[in-house]
Image (cartoon, rainbow, N blue to C red; front, top):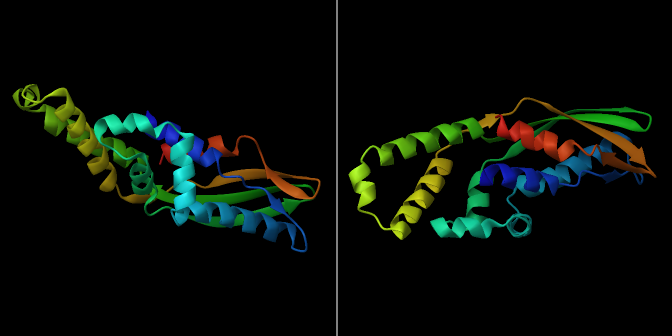
Length: 183
């Protein structure tokens, strides 16, 4: 599904490395997390455009959906909390909780909208392919717009200090994407 690919790639773009030049290790990790997650929270135009370009959002245009607007709608209301950071030598863990649109809620809203549209097969039969595609676009965006925000289960991100820089585990983007997809 486009949304799953979008989340996986968008979270993959979040580099969570931090330098400890003059700050404590905990502060370096916290600042790095906050900087990267704030770009999502603030729906930074450069960030959203980069995501849209990194993913082939052009496939949504068939349905009359602008990929950048889709991204902005999905990210609307995103927030996070850095619950804790524990440093043990050159290893550390950070626990974060994300608040975002409920993916489960989105799927339910989408299914309800599809059920309503397909309840009258004669109405669909009267539409051209372009009109059907436009209707699909309206359903996708309309369903996404109405989804409520929900907190995810806490996510633990593991870090290793390499040459003075805190680097997240390679599984971090996948862990965050999985959390967002089960919210």
